Image (cartoon, rainbow over all chains, first blue to last red; front, side, top):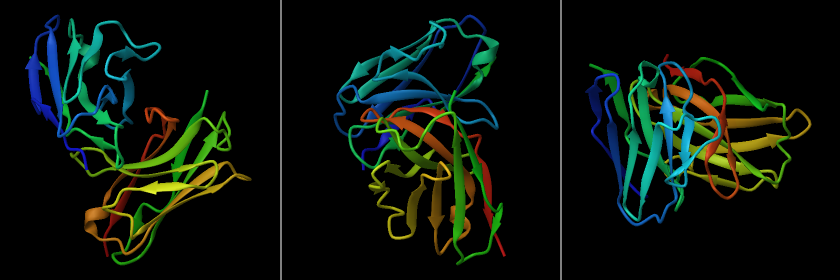
Length: 107
Length: 120
């Protein structure tokens, strides 16, 4: 299985701050990576697909980059509505696997 | 707009079989464009892919669960089912069904999830 390692596991930032989350794959996965947002008690929501493509309707403050083994997810200006846990997911190989999640809180 | 709704018993006894159904509305599970997937999430933990099924009936399962899992389609009811046998407390989780686009495996629509507790 491809292991996906996210860091940090949690972070606290102020409204308006730039927030960056990293996801590292245990082997190269090209750009076969997606990012999701999960709010408490809700299903995950797709934000970014194929490493850097913004899903329709998702605010432009969210972005992603990377390829191979190292990926980055960025919120350019943190908003109160962004409080959630964020997950990366690879689809280079089965089984599909997710990172452990990054919980984002407001300072 | 596609909607997915999971249903099934919220409590299952150890060693028994967990059975869930996902009812899809606003779209057909017979579409050649999508996989239909089950994912689970223990409380306070991350997401685990259980497996998926294609309209042809072909399936892929997580090797960690493969010996215990069956996913099937009922096209007449537009439903996907999940069966997990010989359950233990480690199978207690919120179970989600989701749609993913072939071959990109990105989950664009999800059910709201259903909590299944394994306990005697």
